[in-house]
Each structure stands twice: as C-alpha cells, then as structure tokens.
Image 1 (cartoon, rainbow, N blue to C red):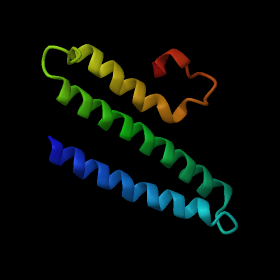
Image 2: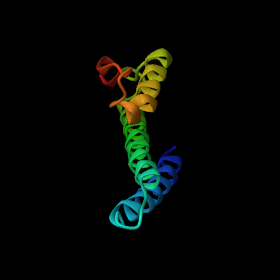
Image 3: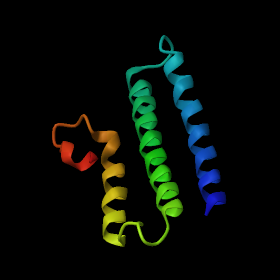
Image 4: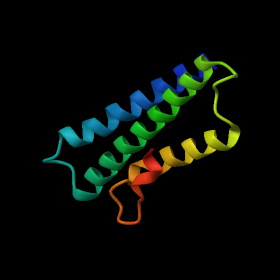
Length: 95
C-alpha cells in the first residue's frame, strides 16, 4: 500500500502545481479559473488528509486501527472538506 500512497501523493502534487500555476497568473485567469484552482487546492488538501489517515492507520496496527465504519466516516468527512466554507457545511464533520 505504500506504493499506492506514493503514487497518489505524486498525482496530488502534480495537481497542486497546476492549480498554483493558475493562481499565480491571476491577471490572466478569470473568475471561473480562479474558482477552479481554489477548489482544486482544497480537494488536494482533502486527499492528503485521507492519505495521512491511511498511513497512520497502517502504522498503528490492528489493535488500534479504527473500524470500517469509523474509517468510512473519516473518508466522508475529508471528501466534504473542500466545501467547509459552504453555508450547509457542519464544523463537527471535520473532527
């Protein structure tokens, strides 16, 4: 699984570079492109949080690894993370 984490981490880094590139050229980027880049960076951060949790769960061993239900809750919370500024988002989801 560490190879999968490495693969995903590299793809996320590539996405981050693309999004930062759009944001660094603000004078050329329109509002929709800036929104795309901002949202893309939020999604990258959420994906990194999921990867970090996976690494933690893998290293902690079977005795302390969360249940499948708890794991799914963590994944769903991280999927919602890019929309944490949305009025319908609930802060307790990020805990």
